[in-house]
Length: 253
Image (tube, one colour):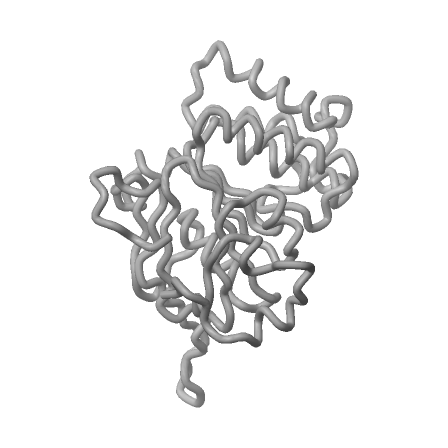
């Protein structure tokens, strides 16, 4: 699903993203991303699959505005990510918790609700609703640093969906997720789909892609090498080694 001339802009468009780092007097820069371009149509659920170290997290951090690309750009419904109004339409689940460990889950959610400018009277109600739905209400006053990995992932989902974003970015959403968390993820994604939100989900797990997305891009060594439906790319339990080693598929960039 590359860019098109449609009058309706994609919900998310990544244009020629390049990422390099580590250049010094004694060594050249290392390329993490090499011209990554893809688009997520409004209302679509798109997957990005690749082995660990392929650049998936870098793509999502750049798309979320948490990291700057060396080259390339990001558009949200046709507007630059540099615009505050564009960034406000994003929800992002990182592969790790970026929040201060000494703060409680409730205080962080309420702070984020204020930053997202949720209507004042509805802020606390929205936060309490999400804490209940994620099974964290009884633990909401505990510092995040005392949470288990599974609890942190559920909290991450709560903050990502807090402001009912139009574009949702999920980095390895099932990694470290506990049993209650799977139900939370399905619940939140189902709700987002019903209101027409768009999704970009990065994972190394093919089950995530077949369960939650309708179109998949394969990322290898910082490049998009294949694209297609999960059924086309992963038929009959096709092994990941075969997918990663095979040549470009029809429709690849």
